[in-house]
Image (tube, rainbow, N blue to C red; front, side):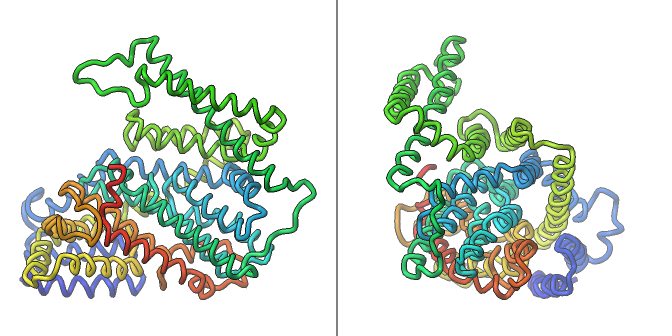
Length: 531
């Protein structure tokens, strides 16, 4: 039998060696799980009484993860992303965004970043976004003479925002493994996610202003609208959206009031945005928006609607998914199901639905989900075996015994995440590392976490660490040598763009991601703004 220190060293080098020779992470993890149990308990653990011993404990751990209700949301969000990718919703959204920013320096790159944020908020999937943006935005940027590195970096960095912006699958798996509130994780990641997206857009604006040759302005078309009129049309479109949503919310409150469903009862939660006092508020919004539209004129309203109607379907999907979660209507899994139904209805109404589209989306969903499940099984087995062998306690005692400052511990963990993220899939990292790292973080003095801002409450530490992990995984999607975003883009990029060119375009965006990560480490209270 080996001691846990020796097992830890063997495990570290063994997993690197197995991944280096190309063994899938799920199979490598499962193999090492058996090896860890064998090194700790000897070969007898395989031949003991059936249903007893360490092997049974590992099996129970796998069963517990795979039967988690929230896990059902993962294939549903993947299915929704595949439907969106194959329908014309995304392409029409890109065209509508491009209408408003076509005459802005770097406008197409900015449109790409905004579209990535919207796509992330619809499905929380990464790979499909990068491929979709590579198909839609990359040819247009290259045709207009955009700097190749800027175009590549914008697409892949923005396309990876699905790790940070709700409903992120990374956050769902983290919450499932660590038993942290997924709704709280979604809420906490809003500000960091949009902060990172705004950093990308600010970088694009500054770079294109300093180097106009990196983003030439397209020639104005014959039907190009002047900038002043375009601003009025944009405000008119916003007014139309506000009027529509205000009307729907107003009718919803009236319905609840007439049927008596929003009566205040002791011990019963109030309906979100559904109590009688909202009738006046939504009524005022509706009347003000209608008056504004009347002032703009029917002709301008029609023109604005035609220019921006491609944004309506994405807004509906986001409203259904996130609105149902934060409105207290459903949980995460039910919201994913409602999102799938919303996308299917939209594709039918747009006359884009077909059996080949549905079948192809289902096949891709099954393939992606199968990959995640196999990694989950293998990594959960390894994490369980290492836990039974005493690994987490050994690592915790080693760190505590070193008497390192609190933030140095966090800094070392961040470096390990960045290193592992360059070599492993995020699913394996969260399943393998979180059972070891999170208990250590929870034992650290809360008042010593971060350098600026108000201290976190103890219940917020796991949420903060989860958002930090997601920000690290955002970097890992671009990190050489195995950054997945590079290979997603290469699959649809023109032949003259090599992997070396793609990774070269990532460099400034990786620096921006590390800057955002540093801000989040230094000021943990950022995540508490909406908690």
